[in-house]
Amino acid sequence: WACHLPVSLQALVDDTEDVSLDFGNEEELAFRKAKIRHPLATFFHLFFRVSAIVTYVCCDWFSKSFAGCFVTVLLLLSFDFWSVKNVTGRLMVGLRWWNQIDEDGKSHWVFEARKVSPSHIAATEAEARIFWLGLIICPMIWIVFFFSTLFSLKLKWLALVIAGISLQAANLYGYILCKMGGESNISKVTANFLSQTVFQTSPGDFQKPGLEDMETHQRL
Image 1 (cartoon, helix red, strand yellow):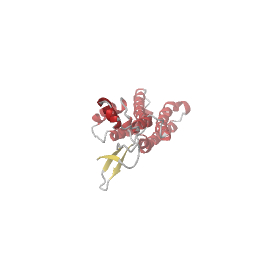
Image 2 (cartoon, one colour; image 1 turned 90 degrees about the vertical axis):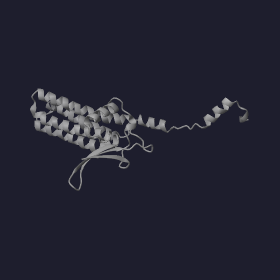
Image 3 (cartoon, helix red, strand yellow; image 1 turned 45 degrees about the vertical axis):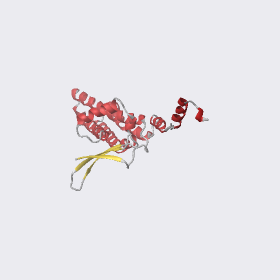
């Protein structure tokens, strides 16, 4: 009976038969906007760095011991550096970086990012935003502490503030290079990173962590 249908209607039927319904993209989009997949990693990504800032600001209220406050904040900063560099970056956004020494004694900086693959589900948008915002905002706070310490002549805290800037800026710099493919031009890297990450975060850019299928970039 289909042969007696009008030509326009028959063409519409043929076009409809060729359409395949793909729910994969909708499921992936819903997953990216879902709740946090790694709550423990997300918690510790912020816990140590926020605790270091709070302890630094409030230590005079709780203790008169400069040495005790200094060691406590430095330990929190060290725990934060290790956890962000080795754990939370890999779990939350699929990025990692480290330094290795080859057989000739030369130092190599290695930056890895998870390759985009349809078979791997990207990290959630919430995790990606928390990761990058925590990574960017906290070093800026320590920079504010640096100027406030300098202008108020509290020079005994200056070494601790510089340590905070150095440790957190190192992680930020390393992960920006991972994100941008190991480019060495810092001005270009920073401009591209801010345009892609800060002003318009794309959840598809942050990939599921893993040891395989990682794109590696090395710098001497």
